Every structure is written in structure tokens, then in C-alpha cells.
Image 1 (tube, one colour):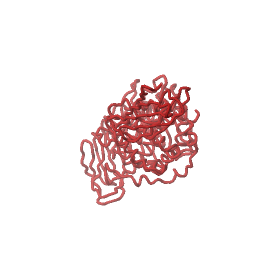
Image 2: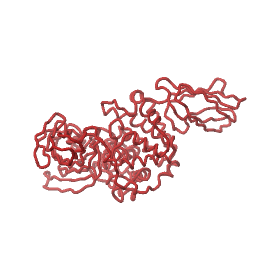
Image 3: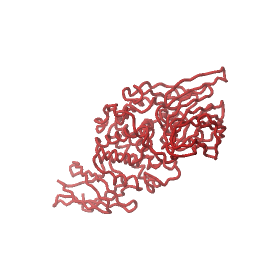
Image 4: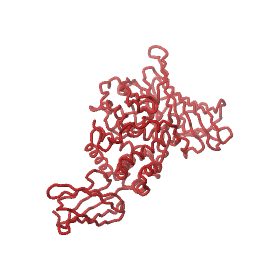
Length: 558
């Protein structure tokens, strides 16, 4: 998700070539390996959700049929559901007495250690969150799912945690004036009645498991702009990826806008990582807390973005599209690993910039991302990226999860080289697609691809706050034909280990690039050979290292 808002790049061209599909089309093992610490002993396999929308207002009726597998001895299934009234619960064909709290339903189960059963919950009431119900500027009622992080529980009886992914099917009944879009493939739409009383029933079904925070419907007076079949030959489930944009009728002139590039984006990421993992990709003008929300196969963008002169930005479309692979197909198993979603979306959106607009645009974007990190005095300065102590999940939407997480990937690419980095990312994705992962899973895949340990790298950049704050002083010694550098690291975040990349410019304007390894100590003395005088020293000329660097030439230097 986001809070708001050509010619291949030279380093990517060799790696954005066609990938053999067979390695990604074999059945994955990640789903069988994942654990569910949130609700031990239970694994929801499928949600069959029926939602009746009113002609006006926020009072809904719901009928949820869950297919549940018990994986260990347990006598009670606990489902999340906030506030709404529960009329009936059945297990199999039998009605069950249940215990209701303000946020959960406790359902007695048959005796046993394992087995699969169906649980049905019939419920109703006024929705206050999760499903955003409002009237638009023309007083038309609209309904949009907005579940992140754990707000599905406001309208869906569920195990509302990313560790438990499931497939979902939707049956949505509502006024015929509403266009209904949801996860997966459109099964059918039927309309009955006449005049203002006409009502429609629309069914969608998603064949791949997703977390509850991605299970959504959008129901509003929308029109569809077809972007056509894209990324043909690079889709996991279909021959091509059908893409569409849904907007309010008065915004039809705003499309396609930057969505004209959506097909190239899906092709690029499919070539770079793996075939597109789902049935389709729809882009919707919607109501959401966020500038964009990456719901599987149905990305929601804030309504106001479509009303700007330039519409939805290219960068935001790229960011939300990347999530279809990272976050949606490979989902962080628990909240502290959110960077595996948002950091990937941040960095791979920058890789789209590199692909579409060249190296200079990519470096400028990464420099801007670094400025955001260095200016953050709350999350980056005080907390690690893998933040196990954050109790308010919304607070995880910060510069650590997005910008610093993206920079960690950028530095890993610089450390390992393109071949090992992208091979490791592909292996990580291939192993955990349609399942869940934690940070150590990415580490293991990159270590396997590169043949080197990354334990200290992951500990330094992901499990401690901050970044290097470095002062570099230098002076030349003409007689010794050398330059002496003193590298001092500040006390605020302590010493880091990092590669120091320097560009020396001599009196004639010639530039020489040097890289030296800086250990995690407060001060490092370096003596480097030079062939002439040094006029200036530039740190990190290719924008590859996260840190705050200050260069101070000695008094006797030119």
C-alpha cells in the first residue's frame, strides 16, 4: 500500500529476460510448511462469503461459510468478528451454541485432533470499519473493502491474521446500479426486478490463497475501461493477464492516463521475478484509508487521485503492482516482517523507474528515498526494521518498512551483484509463493544464491535502529603520492560495517573510483595511493550506501 501519493536500465537488461515457466508452475510447498501462531491448530482453507448490500446506508447482512482444517487437538474455534450481531452458527449440518464477545465468536468443535469441517456464520448489522460505506460527491452510495492490517474482522467472520491464507469466493447482492468487483475471476452476474427496485447478484472467485486483509469487494457506480490482455506468456494462471481500470462515469476522460503503462509493468515484473500469480488485475477508483491498497487482483486507489490533473502517478501504480508478487503471493507471516512487502514494493517500483526511464532517474529516486530515511526522527532513529515490539500495527507504516526496507534490498543488490541478488529473490519467491515467509527465509535464499553468510548484514540493517553517521577528513601527501583518510563514525547509532565508495577528482578533472571496506569501529585510518593531486572527494557517487556522510578536507588540501 502507499500513503499517497522505455529503454531498459543497463544493469537490468540482462536479467529481465524471459524466465522458464515450469519452475513456478509446479505445486509449491510453502502452504504446507506455514504455521499459524495467531490461532494454533486451525487453518482456514476457504471463505465462501455472501454479502447483502442495502439500497442506502451501512447495514449489511452476511452469510460466511468457512472450510476449516484442524491441525492439532482443539475443542473451540475462535473467529474474529467485531460488533455485528450473530444470528446463527452451524458446524456441518448442526446448529451450535456459541459464545460471543465484542470481538470474537467461540464455536465448539467435534472431538478430534485433525479433520476438515465447515462452519457457517449468519450475521448482520451496521458496519463501522473494514467495509468503507459512504456517499460520493454526487450522493451515490459506495462500498469498498479496506481491511489492512486486521480490519476484516469488522465485516467478515475470520481468522484475521496474515499467517492464515485462504481462497475466497464472493456472492454480492445489491442495487443493480452498482458495479461489483472483487478478488479473482468474475463467475456471473444476474439481475432481477425492474426500475429502482432492480437488484443484481454478482459472484467472483479467487483460486489462490490470500490473507484476509486482501479479501475485498468494491461496489459503486463504476464504468470499466479495458486495458486488454497483457504480459501474454508470462502469467501463472492464464495465457495473458487481463487488466482493467474502473472509474466513476464522470472520470472516464482520466483513463487510461498512466495506467497505459500497466501492461508493461506486469510484463517487466513477470520477467524479472516470476509469472504473474493471479487471474486478472483490476485498478479501481475507490474509498480507502491509503493512497493505494494492493488487494489481490483488485488494487484500490484513493478517489481523489483520479481528480488531479495528472491522475494516479506511474510510481504508485508500479508500487501496488509489485505487491501482487511481494505481500500478496508471498505474504509476511507476521507483522514485524512487513518490510518484505513494503520494502520490496518500494525498491522494485524504483527498478521500474530504472527500466522505463534510465539509470539517472533511478539514482535520483534512490537518493530521494535515502533523504526520507535520513530525515526520519521517529521510526528510523528509534526502532529496527524488523520491529517485534510495535503494538499499534498502523505505526508500522513508516520509513523503516518502506524506504529503509527498500534500501536494504538496494544494498544487498550492490553487495551480491545482480546475478546472485536476482537469482536469490527468484528462489525466495518460488519457494514461498502463495504462502508466507519471514525475513530469515529471504536471507537463506540469498545466502544460497551468493554462497556467503549474510547474518551480520541482516542483523545490522534490519535488527537495529539507524544508519552510519560518518565524517571523512582527508589530506594528500604529494611526496608519498597518497591520500590519507580518517573515517569517524558518530555515537548516536554506533559503528556500522559498510563499503565506502569514493570518487577522487584531480586537478585536471579526471575521476578515479575507489571502494574500501569500513569495519564497525569508531575510527578507521586509510592510506590510498594516488597518481596526482586530489581536488575533491565525493562519497557514494553511485548512490549505493545508506548513511549520512560529511566530507571535510584537511587545511593543507587543495
